Length: 405
Image (cartoon, rainbow, N blue to C red; front, side):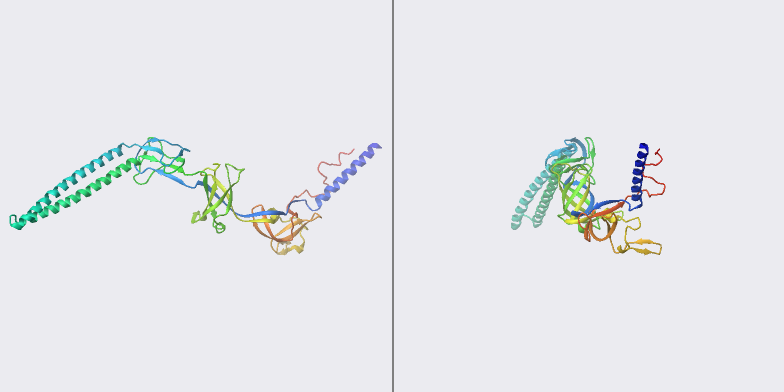
């Protein structure tokens, strides 16, 4: 008798569990939900770019030669005027010696021309006085005048030759100074492109030996903004960005320039928006890739809808009344939305009811609610969890009637 009572109790419990399970499976499917929230939402432009120093100076060589010494390396701090490299100066010193010799020769030629002017001028004055008394023929006086004019011309030629020689001397002196490579700014060496013994040729273009970032505490992000968004980018807008090196940290900056020059890559037009960044902690390095968000406008204390709720559409019949705006299509029973966007609010009876809404900007996760019969805390359906449909022979998981004795 006792075993019979225990069996009846167990059978009753199993029956109740089975009834509950089948009712759940045959009723409205359970939903995944999210609530309407109140808070802020930001209209932003998403872009990618690279971090660069605000001022980067390429240090080159204006003379050809062999690198004799290098005094700095990558990441070296340099001061303006500091010697950073030396080109073998022997050929330049020889050229300087030749130039000095040319100057000395030009000076001697000028002195000789000056002496010639003095002599011919003296002869001309004497003959001019003597021709008046008839002691010298007029032809001799004319000849002495011609000789004076020639001497003056030779003097001017000698003076010009001296200027040319002095100019060549200054060029030789300057070239010798260029053999000593000095830093033009205070900064940090971020690139070194030569080694000792390497020959640099400055015949056609200036070779770049070093790249020096003037100040790494102030950086900029050169972003590529799509042409559809460039009209909303304005100088002074606040920005945030992340880099792969510090994924847990968000950096801030300010738009400092919106450049008008287009960048065309495979028929895609973008524009460079320059973002200034404070890098006093030196966490950012030149060349890093930044994922930038440029804040266009911020909406505070507004209702916002999860984007998943806007994408949700019911799959089970009977969850959306005909009054919500459905219509038949081609007489085949297909239903199609009319009247704009809608979301589905989960009522107390467990059913999803449609609500017409008008939305604004989106940040990718939430969308601004502009119009709609919704309030903060309303539960919205974002997905359905489809369970196994009940059948006549199905039983709840983990339970069976065959185990009773």
